[in-house]
Image 1 (cartoon, one colour):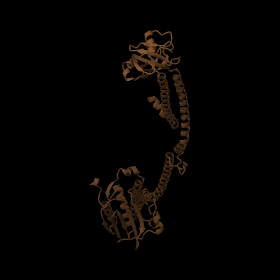
Image 2 (cartoon, helix red, strand yellow):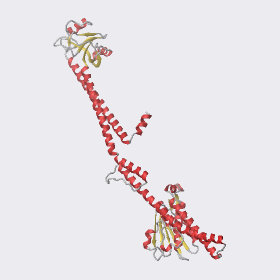
Image 3 (cartoon, rainbow, N blue to C red):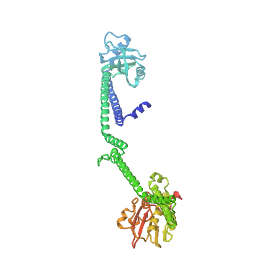
Length: 488
């Protein structure tokens, strides 16, 4: 059985579908054929039983019965069944209480008696007879009717039951069995043709139905072989079956993979471009220091201090850029394991402490209300810190930064030069930096990280010019002013 299952599973899907269709049709045809055969058998047997009952409608005379019984078990030389229909196609005989069969001379043969025939004699008062299958003396199958013997003593007198005797009439089943055998053969042939036709039709339907799957398979193999993500499977717009949904899902997947590859390549190119500047500066400064040591010509202390400060600044910028790149390269699965309910109020307070250290000359005011959201704590704090760093970077010396958290909406407003209107659509792009800010430290990834973190938390972030000058950053996060019960 296991070997058959393994062979079945190793077959192509279209072959398995054809086998399943053929098996289902075979089961249905077999059920219908067997039912039809039994119905016809019942009808034919009912006809035989009706013929047997009609053959014994006229009672036997007392003299005829006594003459036959007196000659029993030998056959009389002439027929004693004057009124009983008895010819070559019928068996007719009387049965005694001990089971002895008394046969008329013109009867077709002798039918073997059974205990059920004796039971009819014992229960003769009920007037019930039995119909059964039996065999004659030559072993041929017959249909048998056994009834209490009713005799007539005259034309005007009603028939009466003869004591301890039953009348047995039978008819051969040869023609009926031949009809049933012929019917079984016809049903078998029709069933076989139906099953073969169903298998062929199932194979044709499977091929037609799985043609889109073949196209999908070819597309997947093409992608695996060539890594070409531009391939698309044509799908009719009005189709909504499983194959169409699978094709649309494949097209969506390849499109997403192509976009992801394009973004990855762009990230690598942008990262290489951004890394080139600090690395070039580091290389130049280090070469100057090395050449000074090799030639024995010391660099003036002020210049040496400036060079070391520049090297330190470039190292800091590289470390920041690498950290930002690592943050952007994290997968969704790594993030999902650390998501939890976070107090946005506590997160903003922690970010404010870091912002005040970076801009001690600035005045940072805060008005915070409780708010709880689902996010990754470290990533959310980094996003808020990036927003505050942006405000600190562009605020004038001695300026003010206003921070407010109310009903899940965090706003950070600075009083710096503001962002030109034409640059607002690009502020969240990776490595994008305003021309006016290129001289300031930064990698151009801070706001991109903010946008990604807020989006992953189910919120939205935006930057806009503030009335009276400066920039206002707005972060909206879903949540509630109280923590959910499971976190308390």
